[in-house]
Length: 383
Image (cartoon, rainbow, N blue to C red; front, top):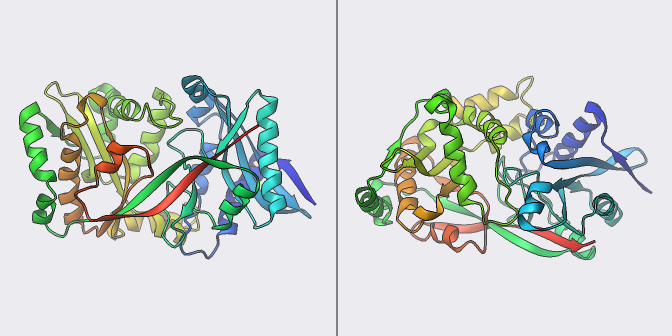
């Protein structure tokens, strides 16, 4: 018999977080949740998303042993923006037992109905900055620190429970051109030069993460992330990041970032109109660290960041203001990052998940050697 326990207190939360690690221990493709980061994600005082979200986490147990987990989330901002009444399920993991998956999702559905929701969707996080989408293809590909890995049997459980496709995302493995001439043959540098001259555009550089945090009296980082807010505004389920969220994400990720992999394009008024950011892959280091910073996990991360980076660059975000799209600005970002990736020694890049229906986003890879190697799905079911 399966019993459901609501997560209460730090001990329960640690069990909730570490169940993912235990379930995938030894799996060469799964990247464990980062314990310390996840603790902050579910901390109502530290995670700014709780200003407009409500959530509870649940554990599934059989004979006292944890066999599954799930978070129930309502993003009130997204529901208001998209005129929906959706309850989200996120951070879902379960053993291959239909009773477990059914009990977890029934719990989220009941939780949502009690709060007036009429549809259940997921896997989704609090916002688009959290991992989203259940893997349905690419189980033999290494995951990234910002995406979900799950076993193939998850999809069968969802279909058995009557869930249907809401949207799909795809990810690409992109080969880094071996020479600058190869990048030029892909037209990015040529298009970038034309765009830069025609519209009087330029790059803005930063030496370290403290410099960008302090730039323009602390206001510049807000401007950069507002490019993402506007670029992603029409994408599925997106909810605009507020000032506190922006600082939260900046403080979390910029400390790990090689500033050479941050590309910011400004117009003639020195206002940011586009940004692209990548980070050397931390997937293998997180596996070696067992998903924990302490006591020795920090060394594996530091080694990968400062001394011996992995041959993979994870492309975290690429965004261009809507009014600047189709003007060659995307090419500026690629023309900036490609030579840097070559110099550092990256062999290929992992793109962030992109909606399969986002034609502009899909088209930007046309001139690069790449392949879709992962697909993930958001499921939905009426309550």
